[in-house]
Image (cartoon, rainbow, N blue to C red; front, side, top):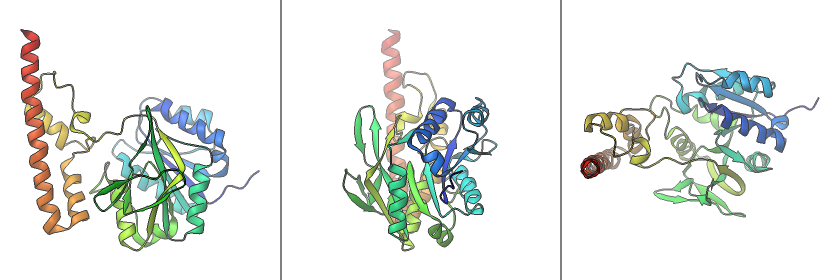
Length: 293
């Protein structure tokens, strides 16, 4: 029996059985499933994900949630378990992000050779195949091309390796302020502000099979559907499923920019988002009326 390294891959899942199985199959093909321990945190899926995972990949550890963990809570639960099991490194991995062969070992080796460093993979959109900006230096969004190592202040948590030494220093992600979106980037920002280094490795790559949602229209039904402004406001600003969930956005600007700069920025952004929402409502009504005539 091959002894696994003290590395735990944490994959949060919810009702994406086939996507999750495809991700695990890739880890099996690349040898990462044998090399590292894998934790799937299933946040109350109703599509039979846990049963299917156990049947095909019996070595995968499955932790269960009640549907209220969201991304950050799932990661926190997985990280706690991994640390209890003696993890030296933890890898965040979203199930719609497929690592290329040797990506995860490249990240782990980099972290081993560079103490107090978080390593992230370069993110490529699968359709079309394009390099996506997945980190930030201040307000500047950045990416890492093959052969490059780009130091960042924060980055997306698609595929990230974090040493346990950093976790012990700064604690776990804040699931109260950032239940779903920004739970990753703000945790890494906290780490870099505490003295750690975060780098995107251009030679460690993932293929993101899906849409990276970040626009208002990504979180609302078709503009032609008859919905009230109040209903759209609730969906866009009061749902944890939305990137624009107001408590998360408020704390994002507060923590990143501080009180005097961050709070005015938040309210200016809110006014801009509201103007976009109202414009969308008016345009949708006009289009609907034209279609009926």
